[in-house]
Image 1 (cartoon, rainbow, N blue to C red):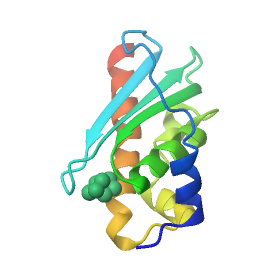
Image 2: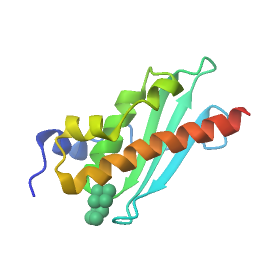
Image 3: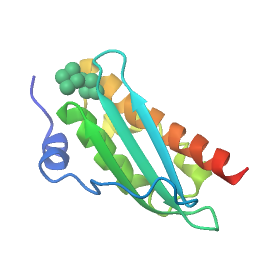
Length: 126
Ligand code: FES
Ligand code: FES
């Protein structure tokens, strides 16, 4: 299977790999796994007091498409509100990266990671 140029670019030069302190009240952590393949993705959002995502980091144990999907969403979420971030759909990710059908679940992992991080944020705020 051939990877698209965008997947290869994100795979070779992943943006925002790393971690924030998960105990920081402004850090939201979403950790998700893909039942289809066992890959794991952790996405962390740094949320300002105004609810705007200032920064994002990820760590993904998985295939090139999963790494590219998480790298891409760290770029997409920056500057968005928590609410806007949840509007990012796996179909947008799959389209941007030109993922083939067998790799769609990798983009779903990234969408789920955003949702999990937003849930964590809400839990921390309440
Ligand atoms: Fe996920 Fe191969 S099946 S990395
Ligand atoms: Fe499972 Fe990509 S093959 S996340």
